Length: 250
Ligand code: BV8
Image (tube, rainbow, N blue to C red):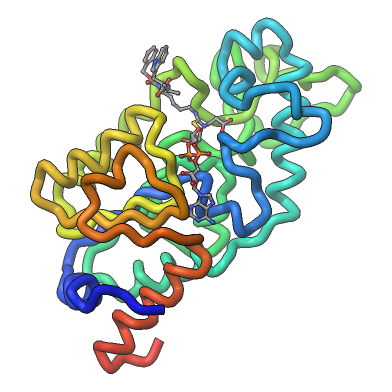
């Protein structure tokens, strides 16, 4: 796979690299992206319609069971070569921030450490009423289960549409974007805010923008380097060529 030698050189000499990932980076781990049609029982539902507090209040059982289905997909999934390439990039780059919109926890399982989870983590649970973090609950047949601290309904610890992101997460992400020399947007349609604003913050601060996506997105026209293809193929090859050119063994 051939890359622009300028890109190899730029990555080789960069000191501050920031990465934003979306559902596309987990596609090759077998997890459907947010916008592709859902399957089976969920094929008649739009993900964005279920991922809201209103949907949960209207039908808590339906939303809880949707997340249980997604959790079952995620527990069967493993990090793919794209996740692993970002672990290597983090080890090699002098300063590296990984910002993810994904809630599947695959970056952490791959070994990424400097990780900002903008939208929470589907494998964590809290109560709807008081945000109590809940690690274990009584499986007494009630769906959703109840909070052992206040009796409230349990929900996944993710950010729903219409809910604010954790303030520390979005502030850290914005700072990482604004201080990056190179910003890579990987596997995201760039349609969900405020995450979608991060690449533009990086551009305004003078960063070089790299997009990795099989499709074009609203961001594509601004990218200095457009790598159109699956992240699981492109990223490992790109990281290998950068560090091979440094004469370092991977
Ligand atoms: C907020 C967790 C302040 C849940 C997610 C009206 C009312 C209220 C809010 C709004 C409004 N209008 C706009 C808003 C703001 C709203 C928003 O942006 N809406 C959009 C849809 C218009 N945002 C919010 O509500 C945010 N909060 O703004 O708070 C506020 C508060 C009150 C009122 C107003 C404002 C909260 C947003 C977070 C929502 N939660 N996830 C869960 O997962 O269940 S978002 C969820 O969708 C994902 O986490 C992810 O972020 C997003 C999906 O985006 P992508 O990751 O990009 O995935 P997608 O499927 O779209 O694209 C995949 C890409 O991968 C594609 O481009 C594809 O080509 C590519 N691909 C495919 N295969 C591969 C690949 N790439 C590489 N390799 C491959 N192999």
